[in-house]
Length: 174
Image 1 (cartoon, rainbow, N blue to C red):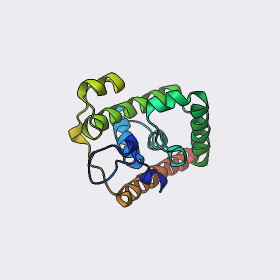
Image 2 (image 1 turned 180 degrees about the vertical axis):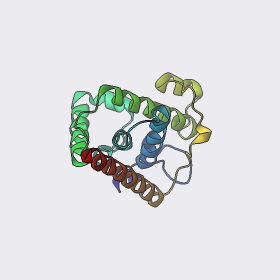
Image 3 (image 1 turned 120 degrees about the vertical axis):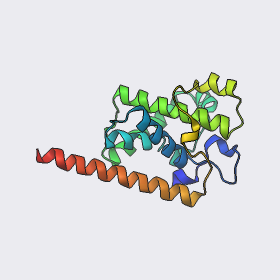
Image 4 (image 1 turned 90 degrees about the vertical axis):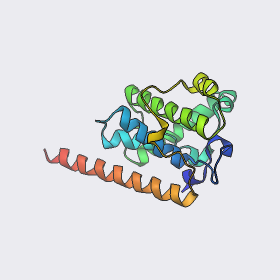
């Protein structure tokens, strides 16, 4: 609910609707799936929830996060851990998983910056790096309504959670 109502880029995007954190999270999870096609449902759920603390603190742009410093990052990390525990994910993700999710996040940010937020290719490349082997054409970056974003996010969350639960049951039976 909340992530569908939080605008990425402080709402400074093109389109009839804001590009929400929920849409961004769906994009990151899809990109992560391309980077790690054999990823478990648990890892993909972690990718989907990578920005979940933003339902509380909103989506702050990176330069502002830097100004806020450690207190902001500490708060965000504590919220992320609590969310992970709530949904039976490890409080701390493995470094390799964090790195892969971050890469997917940066690819998403590059596409969003250039296609929605008015960044030039050079600016986006400077801040996020230029994605190699990915084309924005394969992903829908059209800002959608809050209702659409909420429904799509919840559907994907439920699918991944069910896959994770069935995998857990199957592994427990062995």
